[in-house]
Length: 305
Ligand SMILES: [Zn+2]
Image (cartoon, rainbow, N blue to C red; front, side, top):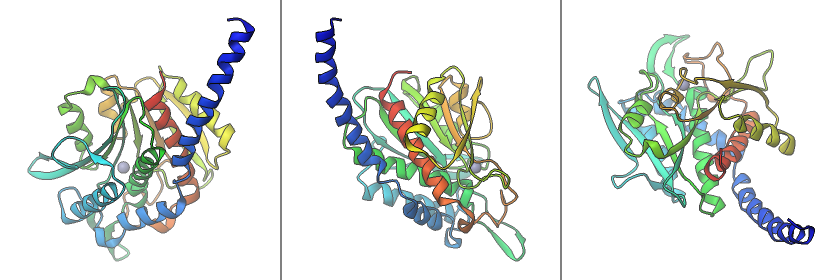
């Protein structure tokens, strides 16, 4: 390309890039720790009874999630509403699926399980297993990313499906049902997972494990770029993973060759205990993780990788 042609192209493209960045910033700014507190506080309150799959608490959690999606104008996936029921061993459960359509027939799925353990053995007189970190934290991420993408008000190249899985604690059942029954699985380009993003090891409280499919090093590069640009408060541990099968709902996607990213802040002594409560969440750190994940989701939906 001649220097004049290059200058001309640059002059043309630079404002376009800035213009597109402006749209993304509009979505980015909607992600706030005050909302993360409200979403986690509600989902992990005693009144939702630990969100046991197939029980009243799980159904109340589903109603709350659906009410937010409706309020923000994010449409259900398919023609039968947000709830996608399925049954395993006589237990009725519901995945919640919403979509922001793209220009192509490809999709990115952004998901987190919303179920937890319900009531269990009382410890110090408390039998409600609230599941604030596991996984009201991840649900609050998917909710905030959905609203941010909607606020961008620009059609992404690929559609983005927002998935709230049920029955994870009973054996990754919701995500398994989706993957095994999805008629367009070959059009799913990537899966982003959240499972526990609100805490951190005592000796390294700002730690985040960032798992991603090793054959897609761009996923690691994107976060490195955004860490420099945005100065996030968390410290990522980059874990490129050959076969990212195991641990959470990423399993079924990875088994089908779909590249994944998964944000996780590691286990802790309150994990699967009644003491996993909203007051123990690091909301500032979690909100930065959600901001970084929104930028990643936008790239998953718009870039080649
Ligand atoms: Zn979990």
